[in-house]
Length: 303
Image (cartoon, rainbow, N blue to C red; front, side):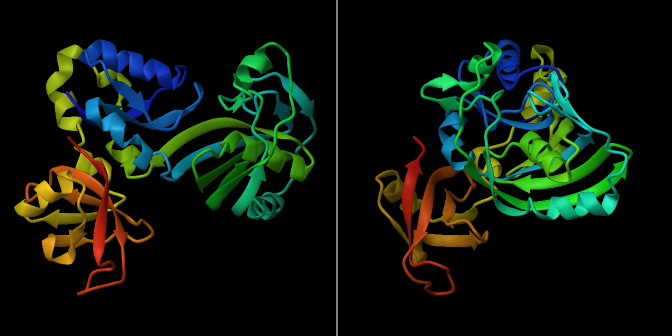
């Protein structure tokens, strides 16, 4: 079995636990996931099996979307509700308008200091390994992009918002930093990943449905390589061009039977007439004959 599964990760387990379940239940040796979700977080976790893992570099840079709840009034060492409270303050004076105004400052390109309780490596060591030993080290700020952040509601100290971010963005750090900006401290209390690239929560499959005695449903839920890369343009090519692509030769516009353009992505899914993925390529040259390119250079050819 190979392809992609759009898994809905439940609360209380790690992303690596999801991989272990799939390996055990489906008896697949090569399994990986895209974009770690913390144990307390739920939602979309794209999983690849077999050759699908070779396509991860083209999916790892996809933007992520979250539905989050921030609790005002206390900060924790993990920046979420699982941690030890470090500071607290009375948040009752904070208004909805103040929260909205503070939220605006987190839109666009911002800098974040990675939390100590994170999988980020510094000098070869995971930060969370150091944090568990009670060691805190200096971390350099990292630039991330918050493409969109929207206030949804405020109920007492609980603030709900949605956010669309670049990979590597810590939503719990946004909550922590927003609490500091408001002067009352804050932490992340609930997080659902609603999308990762073209993988959406609406089409996700609960992890408990991944069972050896439920193979028919699992197979129906499998996404092909072509489907998983739906964030890329699509080029359906003539049969003769397939052989040339496999030899690493570029495509011309005359090789293309049908083209579907996706903006803001120069990568292209090159598929045969059955829409089976042959290669991932990159558009190049000048616009020609109605196409936004004059050639496509293969970057990753599937064997």
